[in-house]
Amino acid sequence: MKQRWLQQIAATSCVAAACAIAVSVPHTSGPVAAPLVRPEVGSAAPASERPRYGGTLNVELGELDEPAATTGIVAWRGIVDQIWSLTDDTLVRLDERGEPQPLLAESWEHDATMKRWKFHLRPGVKFHDGTPLAPQNVVDALQMVGGRHSATSDGVQFDLSEPAPLLPSLLAMRQNHLFRAVKNDVLATVGTGPFRVDSWDLQKKGHATASANADYWGGRPFVDTLNLDFSRTARDRMIDLQVGKADIIQIPPEMARRATDEKIRVEPTPTIELLALGFWNRSPVAANPRLREALSRAIDREAIVNLVLQKEGEAARALLPQWISGTEFLHPDPSDPAAASALVKEIGPAATMILSYYSDDELQKATAERIAVNAREAGITINLRGIPPAEVETKAENDRRGFDAFLVRVDLTSPVALHALVGALIDLDGFLDKRDTVLDGNDATAIYEREKSVLESYRVIPIAHLPRVYGLGARVRNWAIPAGAAMNGLPLADVWLEREAQ
Image (cartoon, rainbow, N blue to C red; front, side, top):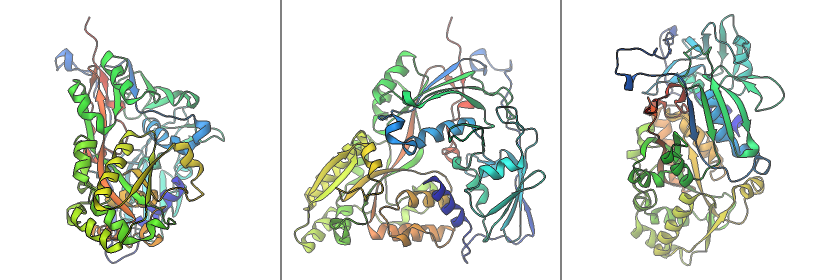
């Protein structure tokens, strides 16, 4: 999945179309590297506000319900990506506005056609084992980006078949992290990032520890050690935070208000996840487009946001939220109960539809129940079926038989609309016609038209856009996730811990 996803993003970034972004200058340089060195501990500020080094940061980021041997490595992709964001760097980073800035590449340039790009590596960078970062390491790590790329004396050159104006933003995505394999094992790699993995025990449900990279080119992280735990339930994570066993926890969006009521410091990101309902391509029941439209119009998205999500999210009109695409407001409000009832009457007796969801996801379960109520009011019968994640994995190549529609949660992986949409379309391709999974251009018009095509097919029904929500303990200082950097990973290298009162 990852390989196919990256290849399609690269291909889409290089679309040749009249609406593509173009330049008229023969040679354009990218930003010059700015130092990312963390501030030294000084004496100008009061002692309680001065950054300090040291300590162990205890982080609880979710719950895994199955051992790796059961679910396979795909089920662990989100956890792996979170750890990679701490241990590996990318060539480029995105700033708070979503603009590409230097990271491992201190500068870049392209020719007038935007088909040839050269990225110049920051000198003196080393992997965690002390091996210097070499241009060939970049070539090896980015094999799935697409196009032809080769090592130069101080970096890497991309030779693409079509203009790629958004290549720097593509290379900033976490999936394009740089690493060096140390043996024939997907997890046995070393990176150049601010932390190095000390232990990683998947058999204990994703527990990992990492230590500060004292030689990190961007400045040593403030904390000495990260203790990462993926085994605790949401309620247990909140208790751990309140009693001081955890410093940072991930909170399900629907529990954010409860956490606030319990005096937990809650920090949400912008909306970076799509909650949607998809219809299987090969379901006879879901083959009727008017039935799909009727269900879409029957769903009360505002009620789901208010009641299920406890207002921690936004009703969705499109696949991408407004802050990413800038065009969500142009899509009409899909909720219209009266129109849904009229459509059902025109269709005649509607077949019973089976809607499934991951049985361990309380948000999906509660959303499915609300959808069933809305559908019944419009004259559509929906039966619900919770399915364990491991069972869905085993049926992935067998049409996931036994249900007609499925609730999904799709991570939006970039603040750049093109890359976010391509990633979402690939994650949703089991529901879509093939023509809807490929863009015909890379500007705002092409993105809007593709979203419109998907929405008008009613094969995917957007329901809500969700933030990622974190709870912070009393010791945590300097936590910040601006909108443009929301997909970069957790900012744990910049966090420091206040000393406990003596």
